Image (tube, rainbow, N blue to C red; front, side, top):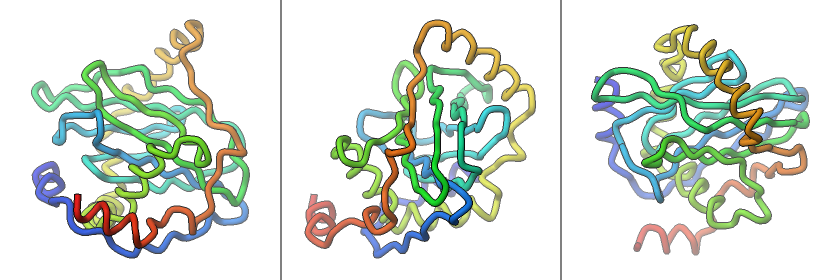
Length: 205
């Protein structure tokens, strides 16, 4: 029922979204599931901070995650709808976060698994635009509010998934496949909004 509800939230017109600044003693990470280059609208992605479950990231949705500043390990697993199982993919990112700052992660489902990458706001212009389009969309905001009430489906995540995921991290670490999110890659709240010209272009396309 939850998957059907979220999938029926057809992409609605862009809205004027208000973005709260990060608390002065916390860091904020937006995990945003975009669609370009991805597939599987009914598959969900479950996000983790080391062994702690952050929540479920559904199709064209986002999670605003407040956490302590400092070092973190973010990673994800993808649900396999056909078998109701979970599969681990190459999606581990180490992060060093400053207090009072906002950071961005783009999450996409690919044929080979999950593509999760940290975003450099000044350099990753195309990916930043995809993220802002989701964050400023009415259906995404509505789905986010619904999932927030459900605590982003954290109760669905068995502890064994996080334990197995952390074991697999060591293999990726040895193979030097870990991406990094640096403290200077933050974005200001007002820069998360789409300008009016971009809104018109996206609505018309």
